[in-house]
Amino acid sequence: MDTNVQSFAVANLRRRPLVLEPSGFVAGFDPDTTNPYINYATPLPGAEPTGRDVAGLIEAFRERGLKPRLEFAPEAAPAVEPALRAAGFTVEAVHEYLVCTPRTLTVPQTGAADAPLVQAPASAADYTVIDAALAEAFTGEFTSSPEGAARLRRTQEGGGAVRFVRSPDGGCAGGALCSAPAVGTCELAGVGTRPAFRGRGIAGAVTAALAGTMFDRGADSVWLEYSGEGSRRVYERVGFRPAGTRLYMSLEG
Image (cartoon, rainbow, N blue to C red; front, side, top):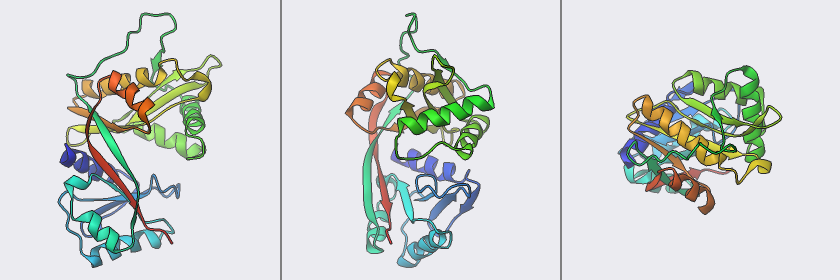
């Protein structure tokens, strides 16, 4: 699965508005933001970069005023981490990823009157409230913006999917998004619930709905990363299982 996840990461970055491919790597940039979690690079599966290759990658970031940063499945390109360390990169985090298939997907029961009703966005206002809700759910990681709402719309209209649960005031209680499939798989990300609505099954309902949507469109698997044991249990209840790790590395200064 590591090679599939890494091949997906390459294909997904090639969808960015600006794409550069220094030797052995793909770097994807969005001119609307300097957020390092959106502007980053990943190696090609099996890449064996030289010091010159890594220097070229660093320059691609520096000339745009961005932090050099990578996300990748290390088992799919074992030579990359040592090459990056030699150039001064350090590890930000190592995240386990979970995978769901049509066989393992378990959709939560929806018969109860208070069960979350998962919807697709139908208007510009929906994208705006979803972006605001996710910004509130991930406090401090990013702020809501027209550009963030536009990225959600591009995901929905570009073959991926955005799903949310509406709050009683007409806004968004929680939501998530899933990228368009590539090499048979796709990444589910940004699962967030506003603090006032946590503990009501929203994250599990949205996650299951998104996975089911992508399977209906022909994806063989959906993968995601989790931020803690609580979220891991939510994902495991709807059919996600451990499958590998992803490595985050960046260069300071």
